[in-house]
Amino acid sequence: MKTELKNTIITSGFTTPLDYFDDLSDKIAEKITGEAATDLIPKTSGFIVPENFFVKNEDKLITKINYSKTKVVSIKYTLYKVSGIAAVLLLTIVSPLLYLSAETKDNEFVEMSYLQLHSEELSVYEVGSMLEEKEIIELENELIYNNLNNIN
Image (cartoon, rainbow, N blue to C red; front, top):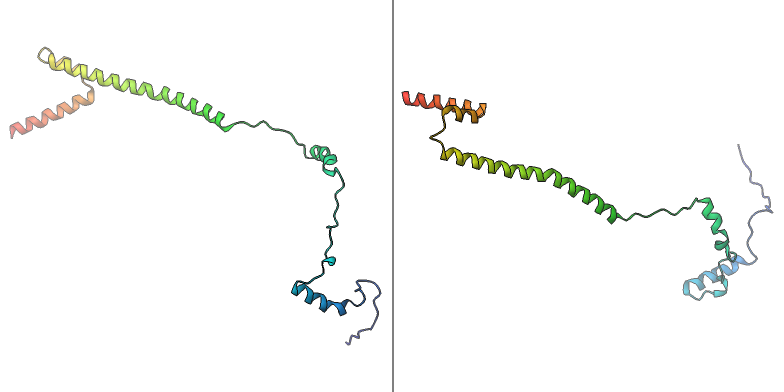
């Protein structure tokens, strides 16, 4: 199937000015050497904004985007508040533990001093009543071990 090109003249579309290609090489050479005519560059961009355009339309823009001012909260204020609460909680938890541990050490020291001073006056039953069950079992095991060593 052969297709034939028809020589038809297109009357609509893009056209070039008269003698455009005759002067084109001269204009390119001028631009390369830097001697281009400045009258070809337009003085304005062609885009014009009407006077007071942004001032007039500011109210319309604000209503369209639902602009509202928000309250700005300082991070320092929040940080101070949170750190104060944390310090109070820490002190309420730690201070009783420190107080009780110091008081327990004092009580143990007083008990040991009393037992050392009055060891001759105490009976076995009084000492046994002061011991916990775990300590009694350890003492029994130690006595049994010592008796076995003495027998051998």
